Length: 273
Image 1 (tube, rainbow, N blue to C red):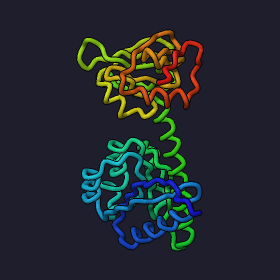
Image 2: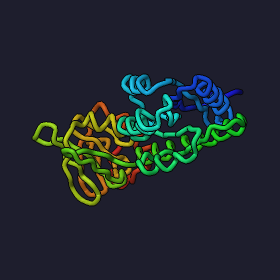
Image 3: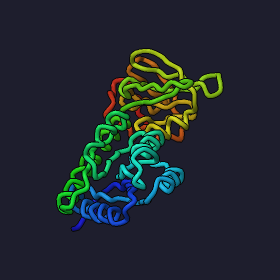
């Protein structure tokens, strides 16, 4: 039986003032899809532009998260204005996980990318040897996908929240639960290492954090830090000793969590109905 591979589609944007160069990279990406689709299927959603202005318009219309960008450094033959480095800065402001690849005819421009702290993953020199260039593109794409997967893992296992203009990152293992307070949009964050407060809503953090589970309209929990579930009294006990009631609509969800995480049964009162 042939089983369909699960896969990921990655946005790729190419900006080069030479249409033939765009076509070469695009065709190489099609090849890369086949080469890199081993365990999971890899697909690229490719878009392109031939000048700085059209590239900015693409960024305005497409809010990518973790896109791959091939940027010609010398856009319009101008190395000092509206070039690939300037475009990279605009991309970095919008797409924090962007994977930027500079493509140029001049190796000596590589230091500028470092000096401007653009964090590019590669600097590919345009070559008359097409096979060498294509091989370098495929290798660079492989690096980009590896880095994006690592970023996805870190994102999933990190709880990120904002207070004012400051952004805080907390190891998801430390989060026990989040619950509403008497103050609108102010939440309590209960952790294994202390307490904190957040601004936002339960629904907001539920959508942003797939590892957390909503047990009621007022409480979002980390299932890894549940100690037991009392099905008869609809009560969840946590590793810090706290207990919270879950809503009747979540009974099935609680039973699924019990099966998945094999919580301790010493304090459970299982309702067999």
